[in-house]
Image (tube, rainbow, N blue to C red; front, side):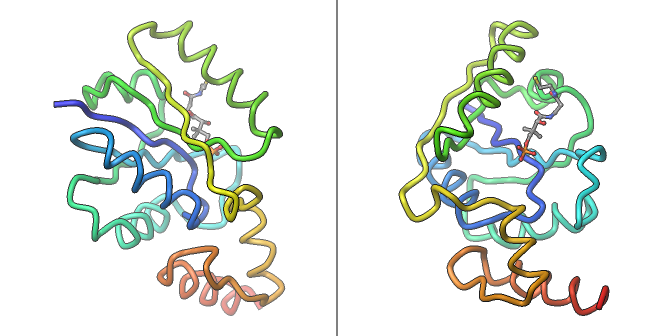
Length: 161
Ligand code: PNS
């Protein structure tokens, strides 16, 4: 069985993430969406909330499961028995950061392959941070995030108002 990880902070999951996960699920037998604790990034949503939102957004994909992790991606990949990491690549601005992470992950584990899927044009400039900003100013998120995330962001920004 070919198992892939699609790692990220998912604070929150966007339509761009969902596009990558959906396409990854067509390439391998099983996708483990790997939700990093990323405590240093001081996420808006707790790890449990992020995992729950990713689970709801991917519930229609039968070969996708969702797991939290709080260690090195290469160690988590070994634990999950995954041989490939699949990530989305948006604009050129992503490249340097992704290049660095891929090189370091390769240094740590030469058996773990990293593969990139190019974002389609409509998601090229979409990010969780932009989504959080739009939500904080009560703008429309139509098409940018799955419906469960629209609800969750509304609740989050109502509760902090
Ligand atoms: O969505 P993000 O925040 O850009 O995802 C970054 C993530 C979670 C994929 C990356 O920070 C990661 O892999 N973290 C796990 C810790 C780790 O392995 N760090 C070393 C990477 S070289």
